Length: 228
Image (tube, rainbow, N blue to C red; front, side, top):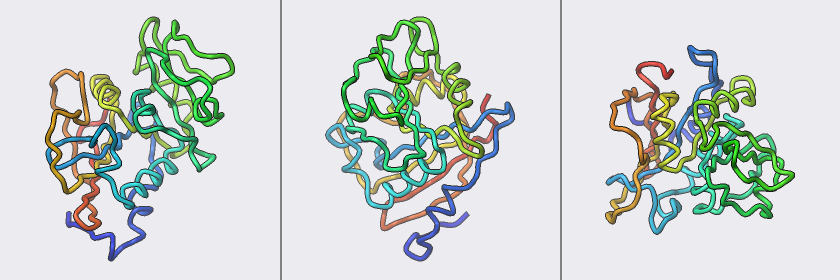
């Protein structure tokens, strides 16, 4: 493994992130997390990730979305990052919410490219596509199975956080890969890290690639032992 500089290989973003993914050993599409973090583990500055990002990081995100076809994200991240309807009409965003505290009249929520993922008692406005998993709270194991049926051939479930959703997915032991951008800053403070609320357990990943653009580092890690 050697560090590859994107300035010398500008096509590497496409080559390294948009390849076809086979189904895993259980016959379901892979689940891949995508996160951005500072050197000291912060995932945001002032509540938003933009201060840690750069143009290449945004290009990686869009490449992963395009390759996946299906994005899974928590409602808190949608609110904090002011999500919009994806420019790529082939990308669908599934928003996980227990509280159903969303702007039901927003263009993003009303878009046919958005799916609301909640539980059986979740109060969702009429006319919005909804996937319900779990009686009183969202059952993420059921969610992965239900959304897996919607993933196109050779696609995957691309997870954009936030920390609570990430932690819950790790608890379910369904994460197959981690696409992590490391920003060349320290942030300090007491902001969130990439996972929150998870039980303490070690999950081993192997480094598949490391790319650089300036001092930003773009890494991809795959499960050493297949996810369940």
